[in-house]
Amino acid sequence: MARPTALPAVAVTAVSLVLTLAVVVMWLGAAMPWPVALVVGLGIDGGWLATLAYERRLAAQGDHSTAVTAVGWSFGLLATAVLIAHALTADANTGAWLAVAWLPLAAKALWLVHGLWERTALTPAAVTAIAGIQQEARDEAAVARARLRSEASTEETRLTAVTQAGARVARVQADTAKRLSTAWATLEAARSGEDTGRALTSVTARVTGDVTPRWELPVWGPTEALTALESGPALTDSELDAVVDEIRTSRVPALSYREMATRFRAAGHSASEVRLRAAWKRVA
Image (cartoon, helix red, strand yellow):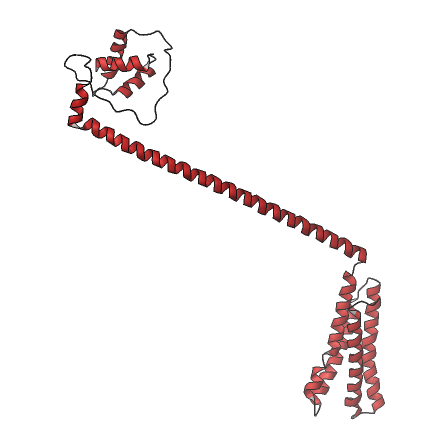
């Protein structure tokens, strides 16, 4: 079966040979006997066909000759040059003759394309196998794209849910902080107010004479973990008072309750929060 590229090459070659022979006979026939012009035309066409046939034979054997290819292109260029020279010297229809002057080179180019077709041609089985491989690759690529899109959608949904949950938590924390801040400001105002201070002092029992107990604000913030049970020997109230007073007055001005409690426990002493705060009130 003829290759799809062989028929155009054969057709253009035939037209090129006939055109070259006709131009040589018409052009040179006026200056020399027409048999001589015919021989010249057949010589150009014959050389063209001989090199083409030899090239095709080498191609069928899987071989190639640069010299033969160069000779073939030389005959093609010679035929093109004859057609161009005839077109330029013609009295009429110069453009039409120039329009067909490229046919010899076109024929050589088509045979070159046909040779490339033959060198890259595959059997139907190989073409079918390649098509199957390409289809399998396309299927795998489509599945991979679908998997990536699904994972991306799932991740987007998860991130959206996490973001919304975080926003809700942030709103709750902000609202709680606002309420705590308002409550703390109210307590601070009540603590520092003169009238409120007198009212609180009047209802607070005195621990020692001439000492007015001070109303402390509740602790708001991180607190240190305290042991629920006393791990060491229990101190008596007098011993506990002495230790608390010593730690409290170890620095000027006197330490606050929180600082005293921290140093008390750091020193290895043990007392419940209730007893420690009671001792603080007695010595303060």
